[in-house]
Length: 280
Image (cartoon, rainbow, N blue to C red):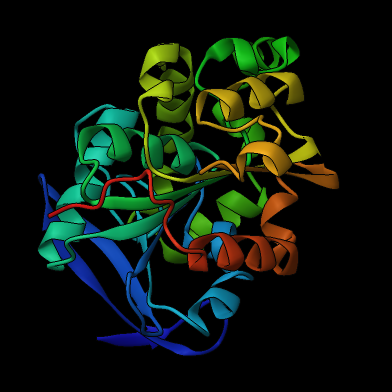
């Protein structure tokens, strides 16, 4: 079917049977390889990417989805996890008969993108993680964990996230259940070993705000694990890139649409490094 997109244009949209879910997705534009967009916690396609989609879809096919319990996708009796979201996303791509895609995740969506690269390396061509990029809980500012311990589901009533959920969710009354499940998810998320990050061969663009939820020095460490942090004038540019957006908090990143589009499109359009093997 076709529905109005957040940008006011029209897009193909629908629901796909994925691992017990009816997962909602939208398709914009045309071009190969397609670009998969993965939203953040408590978010929807619109709140994470509404301003960015028109800029990206001008030159490529964009596929955006909503994970279990988020947006149009109804919840089921199953806890949230990065691994499960990666499996669901992979299943959606296979349902759409897509053999390879670039993957762009905002916030927790970036973690899903990395997990996909580890689990299905031939499926993910290039990766972008914008906001909150970290492979370890130690990367977050410690005061965030303390704030999370005292947060109550009702604290987010009336927020832009809640308002968008009320607009599109099949069961708007389940908002506080979603917030509670995300709180449980945040408390149980596991670290990745440094070796697992270093083994990722896909070119990866890490983007954070200079006042993000992660410490900049941790993101630089992650950038080095992904092949960055070299003297490019001597040895050439590495396969991965790092960008820090000035005057930008975590929740402000989706509003930096023109900055993001300029960086992301240039990164995705660049030739694949010779050292990165291509799937048969």
